[in-house]
Image (cartoon, rainbow, N blue to C red; front, side, top):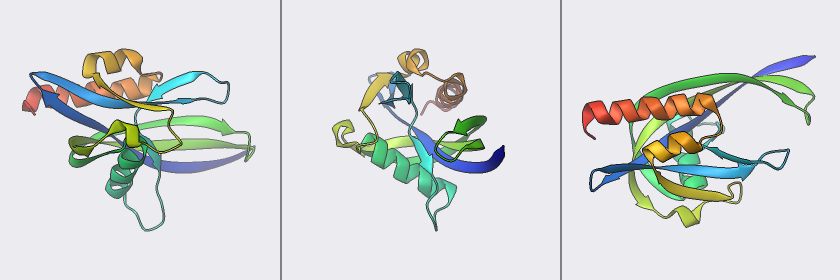
Length: 147
C-alpha cells in the first residue's frame, strides 16, 4: 500500500466577553454523511508558512480574522484516501488566534456551519478527541494568561 505525509495548519479563534470565552467551531458532513464538528484547518498552499495557512484557513472556514498569539500544538493521525488509494500520515499544527473581525455567516462552501460556542460547550461538541486536546490546551493558556 502507498503511503505519504501531509501537513496542514489551523486555529482556535476566540473572544472573551462579559467573562465568558467563546470559540468558533465548524461543521461538515463526513464521507458517511455524519455531522462532524471540528476546528478550522487546511492544507498549506505553495509559498505559505504554517502561520499564514492558519490565518487563511480560519478566515475561509469561519468568515473571521484573528491575530496569532501562540502556537498551541499539533496533532498527528493516519487516514486512508480512497481517491488516492493511499494511507496518509497527517500532521496538523494549531495556533491560538484572538478574534479581530468578521461574521461566521461569511464562511466558505467547504463548511456547513460556523458557530460561536462557549469554550466548555466546544469541548463537548468536537467530534475528534485529538482536537479536544488542542481546545483544552487553548483553554489552559487563556486561563493562565487571563487573555
